[in-house]
Image (cartoon, rainbow, N blue to C red; front, side, top):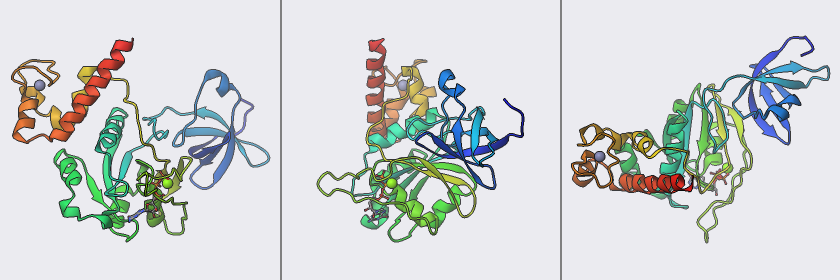
Length: 295
Ligand SMILES: Nc1nc2c(ncn2[C@@H]2O[C@H](COP(=O)(O)OP(=O)(O)OP(=O)(O)O)[C@@H](O)[C@H]2O)c(=O)[nH]1
Ligand SMILES: [Mg+2]
Ligand SMILES: [Zn+2]
C-alpha cells in the first residue's frame, strides 16, 4: 500500500467514477483503487472510507469501513434517518408506495420519519393519510417548502444526523432542501399536470451539509420499489401497528390471514388497526408468496 498517512472521511457524492470525500475539513476528489473492481467492493454515498493522498492533491480510496446499514433506493450507507417525503396533493400520495418504502427502511434498520409536503394545498387537520400513519406510530411532519412552513421543525429533527430524503418524483424533496439550506439552489422540477407525476429532476445522490450540523441526501424520486427479500413470517413484525396484537393470536406463527381467533384481524375489525395498512400487509404477503414460488 505504498506507505504514507491515510485520511478517513465520508463519501458525499459519486459521479462518473469519481468520489468526493469529506474529511471533516475539506473535500477530496478521489478515485477507487483498481483492486476494488476485482473484489466487487462497492462504494456508496455515506460510506466511511480511508484515502491515500496523492501528490496532485487528489485521493485514492484504499479501504471502505464496515457499514452500519445501507439502503437500496436511494443507495446510501450509514443512514440514521430516512425522511419519506410525499406531497399532500399534486401528485396525490401513493400510500402503497409509502408502505413499501417504510418496509425497506425498517429492514435496513433505519429510523423513518414521514413528511407530508405541499401542506399549502390541503387542510392538514382533514388530511386522512396523516391520521392513519400517526395512529400507526410513525412520526409525521407537515411542511410547505413553498410557504416555508414546518421547515424549522424538520430542521430540528435532522440536526446532527445523517439523513436521506426519499420518495416519489415531484414530492418536493429538492424544494425542501432548498428551504433547509440557505444559498442552496437545487434544481426543482415541474409536476406534469397530465401525468400527475414529477419528472425526475434530481438525477444523482449527494450528501449536503446542514447549517446546524449533520448531512442530508437529496435523491432522485422513484415510483416503484420491489420488496426486500423476506420470509412470510418476517413481514408482520415490520408493521409495528399490526404486530403489537399478534401475541394475542391463538396460533403461534399466525400470519393474520384466515387463521381462527386472530387478534390482528379482530383489531382491524374494531378499527384499532387501519384497514388500509392491513390491506397493504396482505398484498405484500402475497407478493412474498409469489417470490417464494419462483425458487
Ligand atoms: N404547492 C407547493 N408546491 C411545491 C412545494 N414544494 C415543492 N413544490 C413544487 O413541486 C414541484 C416538484 O418539486 P421538486 O422539489 O423538484 O420535487 P422532487 O421531489 O425533488 O422531485 P425529483 O427530483 O424528480 O425526485 C416543483 O414544481 C415545486 O415548485 C410545496 O410545498 N407546495
Ligand atoms: Mg429533486
Ligand atoms: Zn393473527
